[in-house]
Image 1 (tube, helix red, strand yellow):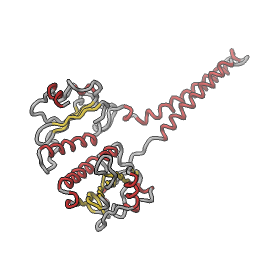
Image 2: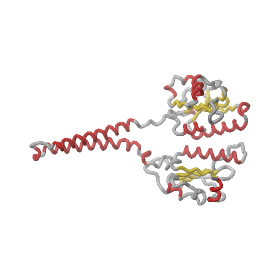
Image 3: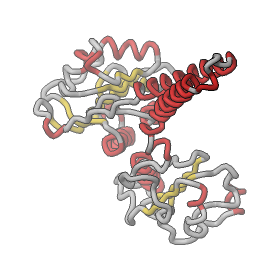
Image 4: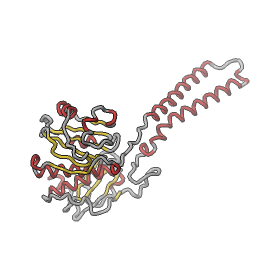
Length: 341
């Protein structure tokens, strides 16, 4: 595959482009020779490029439109480019992810509606509430129209001898459809997810910011990898604390922790290890098991993500990654990414 790619595409020299596009139209605005257009699949809709420290560029594309609209998603790729540069240059320093300003190659295409620059161009995302209420409005207006039409028929002198049974049946069917639309809109409105309440960690007084890694138990390379993981998670997600247990021992803790409290792998962690399946406690206050983690995490930790760690793909879990977050439902699709790491 690499040989075929090399023969079909030679990237331009000196390219260090930091930018992205959200739709197929933006692909044509990418700098010449940055994208391997000869080998790109026909269904590519969006792409992003991030400079690699030390030279080079990381290019990622997707068949999903607006796959890289969120700043957090692009930051994940920037961190990956930084890590790749670190590995290619045999450097222990994380380096800078970009020396240039990020560019949207669709700046000439304004966002739909009003909002910040990081919001999605997707109209279904921008006008979510209006779309949800639309069936209810249509249903309500239709019921009013049916009532006016029925009343006009009753008051019409031409219908004093009686209404046509077919007209009555049609009104009943149309009324049922109107009520269905109204109820559907009410259901959609009731399902609007609440925005997570994000805690200001600067006001947390019962904790201190730490970063401790047991290099003797892990080795230098694994320790540096964990430091990079914490830097990525703390900069791209709502993670406020990170704990790594390996073979029953805490080998790493980073972020906010209660002073003088050592993280301990309790019964709930052992249950997750036994089942081999991660758990996401989206609202920690609702789970009695919270006391097991609040022994060492800040009291105002809002949610938890627990992911088993394995030495191999099919090996049993022997470690545990515990992430504390400062917001209820603080993880979205980022949680799936963390689980795959």
